[in-house]
Image (tube, rainbow, N blue to C red; front, side):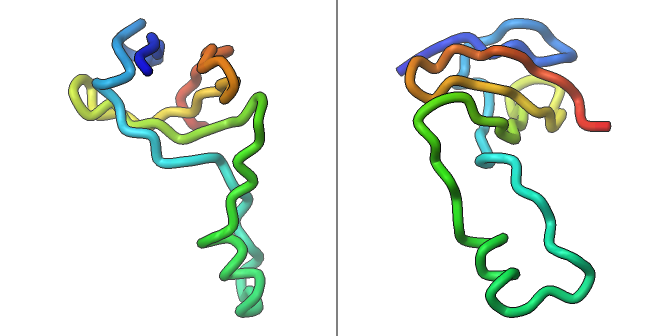
Length: 83
């Protein structure tokens, strides 16, 4: 499926120019337990709905950015550079 994704630096481009690195997760505390570390590395919610994801513009400005996307329709609601 193809859709447009708006890079914060380059504007709207075909999604095939990008690489999705998955949903945004919260890092564990400084000394996580084995369970907390495993959940951080391997567990993904994969919600059917709005999800925040990391994207990389591999065929453009080579910047990492965040996108909020509805996984049911691939509608991109917003994109932003990380703080």
